[in-house]
Length: 362
Image 1 (cartoon, rainbow, N blue to C red):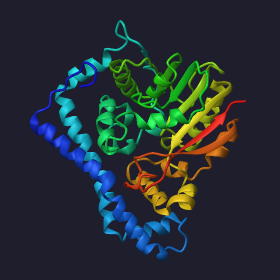
Image 2 (cartoon, rainbow, N blue to C red):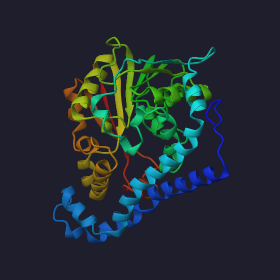
Image 3 (cartoon, helix red, strand yellow):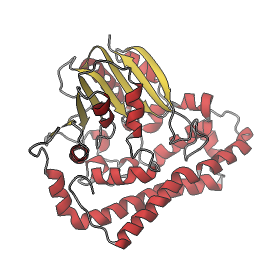
């Protein structure tokens, strides 16, 4: 149940969802240690650990990697299918609930732009193999119901958003903009950290925003959701104190990434902060953590319809920010439990910190 929407599930449907969810959680935590051991036992066979292709030749000989890669894609497909088999027979109820927005007494608001076209770079892909991408009618449900088992419950309290929100230097912020907010989980922490601020969540996908609006209202959080493009928001210049983005940049092509940075710079008042969170760049992974993690992220991007991920992780983010006009740019490691970094564990892609990049509009 989300808010006031009840979606009945038969015992068989719930059992199937639980089973597939359990498999997804195992995929996140079960294969990583075995792949890590294989790599450490055989890494001397790779002449240059920074050569992702050569490392791939090694890992393709590992049963743990070959099966894990197969399992990752097909387990996602089974999860999405299990969710749709619950939703589609009750589609009219779900659609009616999503469309019942801006109800009297709402804390926040939802502003949609039906004329806004899906960005060209999203039209022919299904990111993370999510059916219909983020603009399919049940995208919010698909994402929300999938993300908990995928992250083994470790984002149920919006931990990803909290990690970045806490990394933003404390300030007297009055307007905060979260780009690529999806269902709002990355925007919600700002409502608690800065209760007097206006928090705006922006995304191109109406179904995600509708779901996010309902989710925020059910939690008693005041967020203003708006359907716009992150690279061309239409807001006046100098109208925000903080602009942030969690896991947005790896889903954008290079040209759009540069446009978003420039747009964030335009939107910020002098002294305003731009902050993003992603996985560390390939170079950082290879030099400070494990070259295996760089390969695994590169390969999952190619396998799981995340085509812009390899290009982004190869990019110098400090330089990207500086070219967009920002000063005082820095990278910051953010400890987290998901990857086991600092906690003695390990998941599918290895153990490393989430990675923030911050810049200031002078």
